[in-house]
Every structure is written in C-alpha cells, then in structure tokens.
Amino acid sequence: MTRKPMRWRNGFWTEHNNRRALPVGKEIDIMQHRREFLRHVGEGGVFVALLSAGLLTIPQTWAAENSRAAFDAKTVEDAFRALGATAPALSDAIELTAPTIAENGAVVPIKVASAIPGTQSIALLVEENPYALAMVTTIPEGTEAYVSSRVKMQKTSRVIALVRAGDEFFMATRDVKVTLGGCGG
Image 1 (cartoon, rainbow, N blue to C red):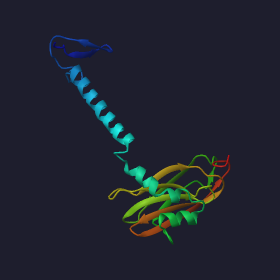
Image 2 (image 1 turned 180 degrees about the horizontal axis):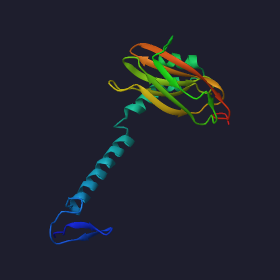
Image 3 (image 1 turned 90 degrees about the horizontal axis):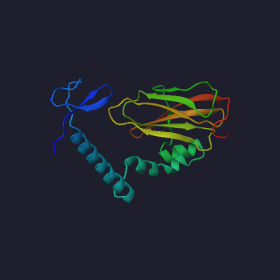
Image 4 (image 1 turned 90 degrees about the vertical axis):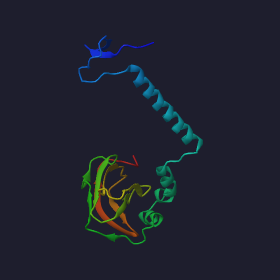
C-alpha cells in the first residue's frame, strides 16, 4: 500500500497528489518519521532496561557515591578533608559573586569563576548550614571554569568557593547575611 505524501495546509496535514515541495521546501514521508520515532523509542527502552538492571552505570552516579562522605560532613573542615583539601590557599584568581544581603535564604544566587589554569572542579560550601557542602561541579578540560547556582542558607554565614586545580586547592570566601529562613525554616 502506497501512501500519498502529506502537506501542511491551513493548520492541518492534507494529502496531495503531486509531489511538490511543502511550503518550507521539504516533502515528508509520514511512515519514515514513524519508523524513526519507533526506533528511538526502542533504543531508549533498551537503555532504561540496562540502567535498571545495573548493567550500565552513569559516571555522575558513581561520582556522587564516592563523594558521599563530603556531602555528609557537618563542618567545613570535615568537608575539606573528605574532598582531599588539606590546606586550601586563598586566591584572587577566583571570583565569588554572592549578594551581601540575601532576602530569602531558600534561594541565594551564587556565581563562581576561576581563572586558575587547569581547574578540575568547583565546590560550594556554606559554613552555617546543617551540611557544609552544597555542591561540587566537575569542570571538563578545555572549558571555561564558571558555575552559577542557587543554594539554601540556614542563616547568615560565610560562603566558600573551593577550586581544585591538579593536586592543589584554592578558595575564596564571602559573607552573606540572610534575612528570611532557608534550611532551618
């Protein structure tokens, strides 16, 4: 059974007998699009089945499991130790942008840019939160070392940006005053 080509006209797909170009300059074959769609759905199903069976793992999941101790740390010093940062040095090459006064501790916008060559990861820590480590981002080689995020802050605190470059750690700090509750209510 052959199907007639379809054309978009007045808000509907309609059949037409001559194989002229569509208004956008393309002919379409509905069956071909259907086959491609079903093929992609099948590939997605196989991917989900492999993931759920545990035969395929995602690297981010593995990384999160390995840094669980850092995310469970209650103090900044414990988080530094879990991340492998023994004595991070203060650096002017890290630009930490955060509001001086955050009106709502539930959403405090923070930006970190690192001009340190070979930056591998950027971590954000909030000193007075129940868990000090707020996030860790891996920076792929050859990309700009820039992170923008929103974090919850329980109360007025010092925010720390920790940057890893090679085997060295650097940091920048900023004090943020919170006027409405965040983590603690």
